[in-house]
Length: 454
Image 1 (cartoon, rainbow, N blue to C red):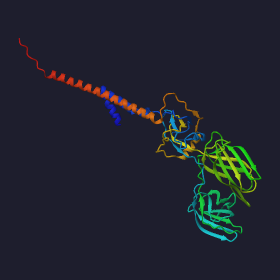
Image 2: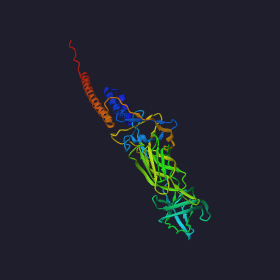
Image 3: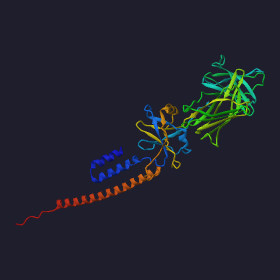
């Protein structure tokens, strides 16, 4: 508002000096908007493809593995540039493949044992909240027990929830300790857990935790897996699988196997590499994958979870544990989508520039941007990146990201000083002319006319 008033007064004054000041003001105020991002030092870019159905507001660009691999490790050389060649603030949202959620404690209000038969535990969740499983806390070692679970709303009537659960602690070359039992989600306030002892010593129970509904991440996607090598050796009990996740993919965060083998326990090591013939495979996971059975009860854990990795090739080695080799039918993999979240404006086109090891400062992120992961995920399928393109620039001298703005700023200051000096000179000239004019008018006004003598 103040700027408008000043400009209005300058325009109404209509003097040459005022015109000079007006030009100076407009030049200085518009100088910042004229600054453009210099892409000369960035080697690659991709066009951002956004569906017309995406509305203005928060949006996220899914970042593929091969793009991330060509960025700095801290992603500080990633830049989002709009069609007017200005930088667009954004923030990186780490991808997630989902997890079981953090288990919370329940109150054990009753416990009973029938020697050699079973151990009964009644828990109170304190409210009718959704849960998907329980975790039995026990220090007992070396056991395999069947578990039955019933639910109730009043601690009297009960309904069957699961009758074929298993918990186990087994030592050996492929040790297993699995104390959770999952079931279909329900909101019973009271849960009755019966552990079948089968003439074995009862377990020492320290408490029970409940699993909330799964923290299912909308930033998770299945990956296409192509098996390049699948060999097993029954004599040594080993299985080795090499798989390709494809050239265009998102960072993998989990791998699971499918097998028709009835029961097994194997030590599993999962590696990743950039090429299938790599001599330096990076270890991403180590643990036990198993399938247990006891009568009609069964339990398995066939998934390896790890921090998201950009490797294209995977190698899974199964060894030790149960006798014989495990025949693996196929592998499934899931990705965790990292996103570049920004404020989208319709009518603007965008590019992502990357691959600049000498980038000066991290990409600008909007401090006031409150990330809504569900909103990003809902539009993720509507936003994608084009194929990689090399950033070809003219032979003109390059300016880095900072120097471009600083040189423009120096030019503005120099031009401003020159224009100010010109204005002062014009003002001095006008003052001299005004003084001379006043003197001339003064002499004419005060002069006396002498009478003529006849």
